[in-house]
Image (cartoon, one colour):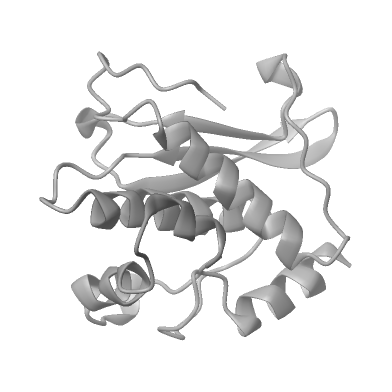
Length: 163
C-alpha cells in the first residue's frame, strides 16, 4: 500500500492508510478462511497495490488488472474524499471506496443490488443515501472495524470467486 503523503494532491490523510487496511481485513474475514492477505515490503511482489489518486486522474476509485509472478492481481486507485464537514462521512466514503475497489482486485464484478458494496452507481440510486446509511451506523471512527459494509451477497460472490 502506498503511504499517504499529505502534501500530495491526492488529499489523503495520514490515517487513510488505516481505512484501507480495514478494508483488506474485512475481505479476509468475509472469506471465512479462504483468503489470507499479508503486506509485503517490495511493491513489485504485491498482488494488490493500493495508491492514493489525485484529482488529475479524474476518478474516485478504479482497479486495474496486473499480473504478478504469473498470478492475477490489481492496482487499486482511490481518490480520498474531500472535506464533507463530517469527518466520519469522509472516512465512510474513503473506506467504502477502498472496500469496493479491493473487491474488484479480488475478482468481484459490479452488482445491481443497492445493498452490496459491489453495487455500481451506473444502475442509478441515491448516492448520498448509499454512503449515509453506512455513516449512520458509526458513532466513532473505530466503529468502521465493526461494520464491514460487505453484504451477504458480496460474501457469497467472494466465496464463489475464490473457489
